[in-house]
Image 1: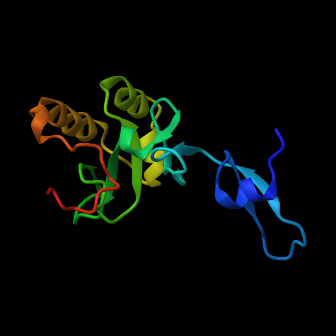
Image 2: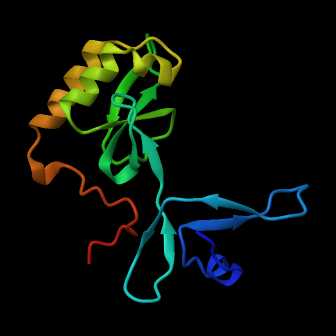
Length: 148
């Protein structure tokens, strides 16, 4: 599909124009854009993450984040419900199948570049699943923080 330069500059198509340092010509890069609003709305690039369990790439709103914390005796893996804790993170879908697959494949150890206790990961996920649905995050990471 051929797009005009004006369409690329406006963001009206699924490709974007990027110029890398040292290159004389601009390069077209295919992005994952989603329509944000009604007619004439700008396109927005959503952040993509890969589930370490099933290895599929999806929006970060559909995944949960695990973070490695440096505690005194051994590093521990914690479920980062708000997806805002500092430290190295890994992402999985919020379903047991993906978490078990990641544990079985030792994907947490690879992602964190450190030994991980699989039992702790499964215990934390079980506690996360047992929480009431109202206690789970809404999945909206693009909000400003105002609930009004």
